[in-house]
Amino acid sequence: MLKQCFFVSALIFCALQAAPADTIQLKEKSAVVGKILSEKRDQVVVDIGYTVLVIPRNQIAKISKTDVPETQAKSVPAVKTIAVADKKEVPEARPGFYVAPNKPAQIRNVRDLVNLIGEAVVQVRTPSGLGSGFIINEDGFLMTNFHVIEGETQISVEVYHQHGAELARKTYKQVRIIAMNKFDDLALLKIDDKDAPKFKIVVLGSADALSVGERVFAVGSPLGLERTVTEGILSTKTRPLQGALYLQTTTQINPGNSGGPLFNMGGEVVGITNMKITFGEGLGFAIPVESVKFFLDHRDAFAYSNDNPSNPYHYLEPPSHTRQNPAGD
Image: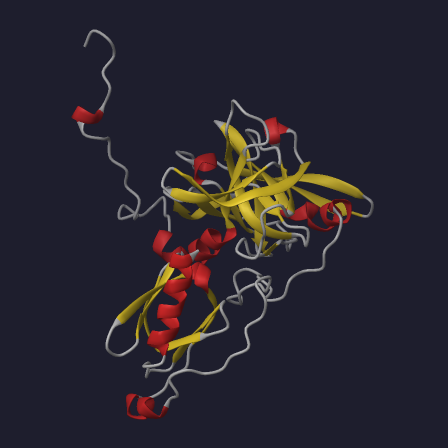
């Protein structure tokens, strides 16, 4: 705690000398003013004139960018008094491709929420297995896990359309891979069937805004049992596994849930369920939705094309000395 407080204090102190016009609002109700050099998923690099700061994303409440000529930079105040909302406020959305409201959603019960979001949660099928997914764009773009479609190009998606009081299953077989990131276990697909309607969508919330102990629920197809709803609490927000941080939840996660959404009680996606510890109960894990937003915002960098020999993903066999030979070899 002491170390964290010292870091925040150092950022505030450095902000007093800043000159350029980009403003980074901190969660400690202070701000850093400087020139943003780069933005990464977990940090922002800022030039404040005589040094460069690396600010963790979890310390940032909001980023405001303004174009100010360098000749006017000296007249820009070093620090501005900016009112920062409490820690529950959801970060601003990048409009267009997906929906991410900047205000917390109304809290509801699971029964009502399932009725609202049921059409947007889908089942993803391949010749080798199945998983779950969720639609983020009415034109048929949907998210799932990379491992659900790994090595496959023949993909189908089952959607349950609401017709009055009934749900009608519809299978779409013209599904295209748009982008994928093996290392973050994320994949973006698109339904291209000619008769496809405008789809119902889910909105992306904020895992950063969650608190440990809050209720969450998942919708997916565990073991092929479509539209299964499970509920639990958030156990921790920063469980380190395989070099990344995951949301840990008591919500039951099983094979087939992979790629499906983990919701908060406002009906917003806060993570993508992707694994569990098989020899324990109530030990499920989800990729934080902040990773999903970063992937979607930079989807061109992860673009996939079956016809492009220069596809950015070309996986090679590991060197022979790293392979484990069978006994006796």
